[in-house]
Length: 93
Image 1: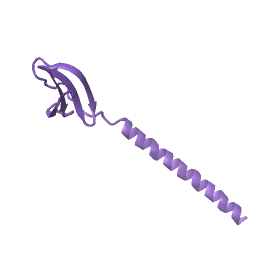
Image 2: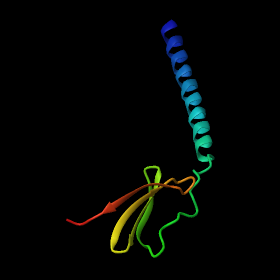
Image 3: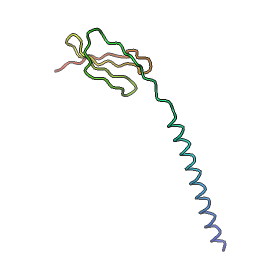
Image 4: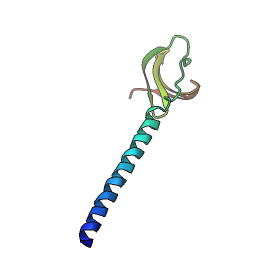
C-alpha cells in the first residue's frame, strides 16, 4: 500500500514539474518574441562615385563592398549609428 502511494505521489510531482516547466518556457518565449529588433542604420555614407558590389548585415556590422577609382574596398559600419568602423582594401593576386 505504501509503495503504491509513493508511486502515485511521484507521478503527481512529475506532472506538476512538467507543468511548471511548460509555463516557464511559454513565458520565456513570449518575452523573447516580443523583444524589439535591434536598431539598424538607415543610411551609410560612401565616397562620391562609388559603385556598390555587395552589402549585408553580419557579425554586428554592416559590411559594404564597393569599387571606387579602380580599387575595391570593404567598409565596415556600426549598425546602430551608421558610422564607419574600418576600411579594408581588396586586391587580386
